[in-house]
Image 1 (cartoon, rainbow, N blue to C red):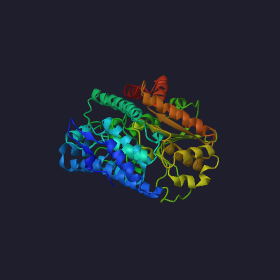
Image 2: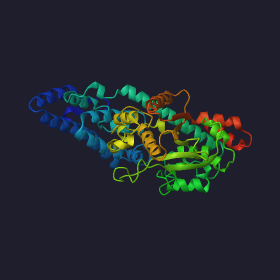
Image 3: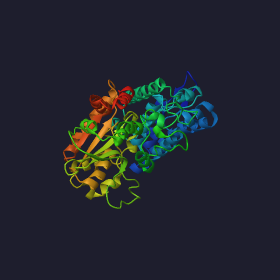
Image 4: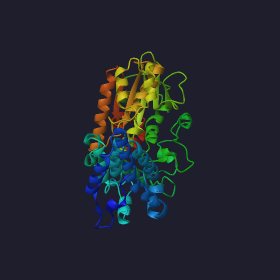
Length: 454
């Protein structure tokens, strides 16, 4: 191992990073190794050491600097301490994955996910992911990492900024709605954090949840109503579960559901049941070691004349599509592909599953693995042709992120339709505007939805 603090001197504004000298020394050291295995181990050790020169000082700042500790504990959107552990682990095992994570970390910091951290590191003469990018680049080049494997930082930053702006626009619109009605919002930790939560769950809903709806959420896997460590998830003004309840729970008490049916392209039908957090196992007696949870559909609608009308099954997204996840966090687990019988009649879905397993580098905004798991659960219960999977999402007009998400939805639809899967995608705005054509008898409900979400 040759990397050390001798290759850099940080003293704003005259910091020195001797990347060229490090490159010469590194290549000389690499040339001494005859086997590829020994060379790889040496370069991984170098990568780990460079990473440690960044992560250790950040840990020190977390312990000693009150401002950074505030960022880590209360203000950060993503747990910074967890990121540091992940980065150290990635540096020890993979060049390509490390390059991607470092670039993403730069993007997150630059986009303000931990506002003030980069400046704090710089002013205290500490290394940053940006300032050490040259050292990493030397290692990655020696390891043969192709440029195509490393995300373009400018492009990634632009995407992150666009997504963050769309998320911010949605959230601020909901905050303004709360302010208009005199709701004093609280933070995610009560008195701390961003004030974006209503004082009670009921304050965030058009009407109190029906007993059936509350019970279904209590039995669901999303913990939407839990208030042990702060306000419930459903109290967030930008909560997708609150939006879903506001849209659907009203119809549980209505004899005439024609406006609801027409919004989803059905001219007639008698609604038998509306169910929230509906669990749909992908097989009989799944192995819980490999499949710990069954797919949870946000809403299902079944009809009395089920021989004529297929079930409607909904996945609903509000601001989630504008908070992009790491590819490793939303990929399809290999266990699903090992069960080949699940994919009978779904060859194109299975091929897509292979492409996003175990990480999804195909879609940025769309959680395709989740939709595939919903498909497997619905197919097991209903069989193909006896259900329609409906994807409801919230559009942000003029947003590049929303446009990209819409394109991803279209790409997913095109793939799964080859297997005969009935998949529909609508925006919440589409549905609410359709409801608006049927105001008679539903005036207060329609006014609430249009005033809040349109």
